[in-house]
Amino acid sequence: MALTPRLDLRQQQSLVMTPQLQQAIKLLQMSNLELTEYIDTELEQNPLLEREDAEAPEGPAAEMEAAANGAEPPAATETRDTTFDDTPEPDAIELADTREMPGGDDAGLDADYENVWDREGPADGAANSLSSQWNGSGSGEEGGEPDPERTVADSISLREHLLGQINVDLDDPADRLIALHLLDMLDDAGYVTSDLSSIAELLNCKVERVEATLARLQHCDPPGIFARGLAECLSLQLRDRNRLDPAMKTLLANLDLLAKREFGQLRKLCGVESEDLAQMIAEIKALNPKPATAFDTTTAQPVTPDVLMRVRPGGGGWIIELNSDTMPRVLVNHRYYSVITRQARTASEKEYIIERFNSASWLVKSLHQRAQTILKVATEIVEQQDLFFTHGVEYLKPLTLRDVAGVVSVHESTVSRVTNNKFIATPRGVYELKYFFNAGVSRSEQGNLHSAEAIRFRIRGLIDAESVENVLSDDQIVDILRGGGVDIARRTVAKYREAMRIPSSVQRRREKALHL
Image (tube, rainbow, N blue to C red; front, side, top):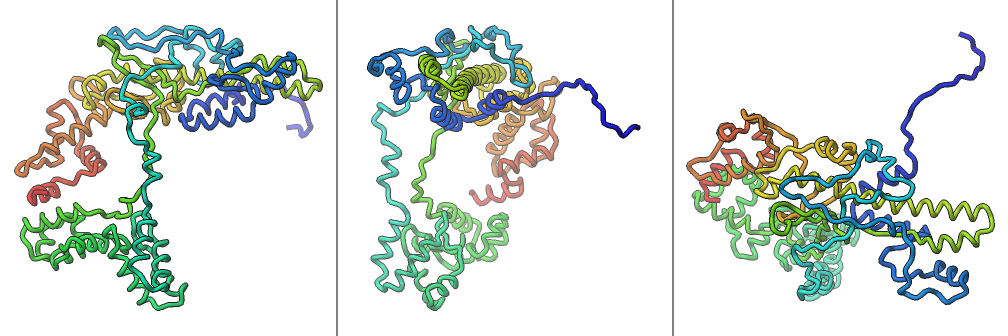
């Protein structure tokens, strides 16, 4: 082999991730909140982009356009050219009994999610709805319901609640200072998890004084606050109710046996009968193991669905449409583009304007294609899981990404990105699109696959229907399911039962014997 330099020609194929393709893929997997933040950033960086609901051009766009025309800035009622002018907005998809899916050529939606648009814009006649009306439950805007944010603003925090009690109960300034340090050491549950000796060393006082101050703070409201563990938290609440007798103290000292449901050993240690033990356990279950959560002012943010589903008027199918509130619409201001193009002088200015225009155009097309793909995937999921929406979770079918990708003519990775953090509002509630994908875990003699979620539902139903005299073992559950056409192994039943946090048959029998 000669060790001399030479030139060779080689021909090969490779997939190149262009910046436009990377942007399209990134937009596809974003949630509605992430997409809104991304659009806001692009609107700040690109002067050629504007929201569709903008009433009039403002700022540099309006000033330059007015200066070029020798007129005042345009009025708020002036219309502007957009990239959607030539794209009629189609109707929402309706799934009738005939299950005839809307036509259209989806060959462009290939595995690499590229070449999905022509240079002029999105294809006409695509089956989607970019704006819709949802006739489900009301939003409460006109119903006079209280504003959650106002409720949070008016509520008192745990720290303020405890500070008021500390100022009243503690007269000594030194004790108040110790109490403030203990207050700062509370965790989210209301426990003091740090070592008291650290406070004593910091304040140059004895540990006994810190413990005495802590003991006084443990009388504060809510009961159980400032506890150093679960057992102490429960004992403080029982003391407040005057129910901390010797038997209850013994039970609290053996919470590990209670977790293992060793009721026989607990009866011997506490010296009580089964009925008394059941009553004591019921009292413990009525307590709050996290007293600080009573002052938790964190407002639960409701999930905003990306897709809306409702019954077709007159029955016989479903109507699936996109939620217009989660689909930001941005436009390219062609008039402003023509104005600044005429005023550009240097080559760098012209290059910048062209680059911004191409970026804005591609973003608009990417958003349109994202909406189309989400709607097509959601429509296919609804069609595949029609029995679930009609009859319930027991009829949830096994469904894989490949099943949907083959019908929608996209790659499995595209379906995975579409269903990630995307939600659909159905007559049965709001679900993440990924919820409807279940692998077939068993096959009956008739050759029908059963989804894992449906099997878990049937297992829970059998266990909920148990009686004290008839507690089902895992083997008995297997026999019942096989009798119903579900061929499943015992270890699978045990795995599903443990995943649902259902105890074994022995533990359930003990609980039912104690009437828990």
